[in-house]
Length: 389
Image 1 (tube, rainbow, N blue to C red):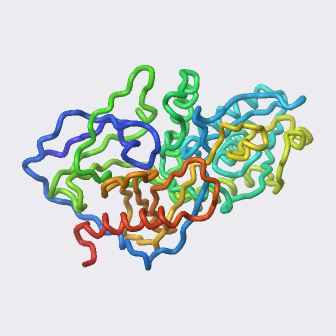
Image 2: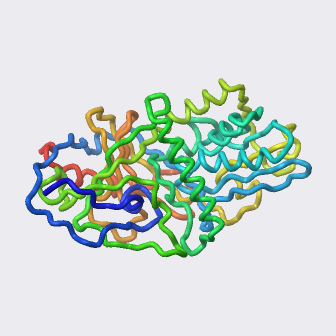
Image 3: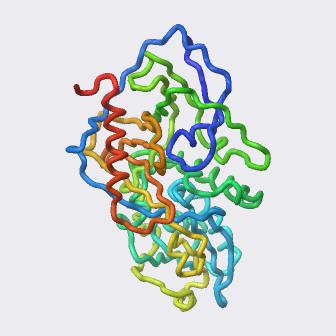
C-alpha cells in the first residue's frame, strides 16, 4: 500500500490533547492490504518506579469561552484577556496581539499587565512590539504559575468553550487568535524557546468516524493542524489495531516561559510582585492602560462567576532522550474518566496526562486519577513492540 494521507487538516485535535472539538475525517475506510514494512520507535519505560513528580494546575474555563474586550476603570483603559481554559499556551500570542490593539486606542504608551503566565507574558511582549513601556504585576512568576503545569502542545480548543455557548462574534475572535498564535509558534521553533514539531500517534482500534461540522458550529481546529497518516495492523509498533501519525507543535513550558520572561526584561520590562484584591487597587496604578490577564483570579477580582477550574494533573517519569514522540489513547476509555490518556516526551521528563475535573479547586493530586493514568500508560507501552518483558 502506498503512503497516504488519511486525516484532513484540522481533524486531529479531538484525537489529541484537546477537550473540545470533533474529529473530522474521511468516512471511507482505506484498503490496508498489502501492508507496508513496519516502522519502529523506542518504547517508553513506563513504570511506577520511574515517576519523579506529579503536578496539578487549575485551567481557567468559561462555558462561553475566553473574554477579550476593552472596558473602563475610572479614567483608565482596562482590557480583559482571560478565561482560556486549557488553551492558554496555544492562544496567548493571538489574544495578546488583539489586546495590544485595543491598548493602542489610548494615547498613552504605558501599560500594566496583571499576570505573569503565558497569557500575561505574551501580551506584554506584544505591547512592547508596539512601543509600550510595560510593567507586569503578578503574585507569582514562572516556574510558579499555572502555565508551568501544562502539557503543553498546540491545542487551541482544549477546555475552551461549550459548543452551545458559541456565537459568531466569539468564533471570529477565536479564529483570528488561533491563526496568529499558530503562525507565531511556528516562527519560535528552536531550542531557545523550547518549541518544536514532534509526531503524535493516535492509538485506536477503529479509524474515527466522520463528524462533519456545520455552518453554525464550524470545527474549531480546522486549518490549525497538519493532516495525518493511517497505519494498519502490522505497520506500527503499538498494541492497537491502528496508529494515526500527525505532526504537532510541542511547547516545553519551563524553557518557553523562562525565555519569554527574559526577553520581556531585555526589552525594558519590569516585573513587580504584588497581589490585587479589588479593582480599586488597579485603579491606583500609575499606568493609564491596564491589561487583565489574571485567569481564574478574575473570578474574585472582577466578579466573573462564570469562571471555574478544570483541574488537571500530570505525572512525570524520568526523561528518555531517545523517545521523541507523543501518543494519545491506546486503552479502552474508562467509564466516568474525565479525559483520555496522553503522553508527551519532553526534556524535563516523560509527561503522562489525562485528567480534567470540572469545578474542582484543590491543588492536591487525585490518587485515583493518577493510578488510572499511570497504569493505562504502563499497559499501552507494555504492549508496544520492543518493550521490556
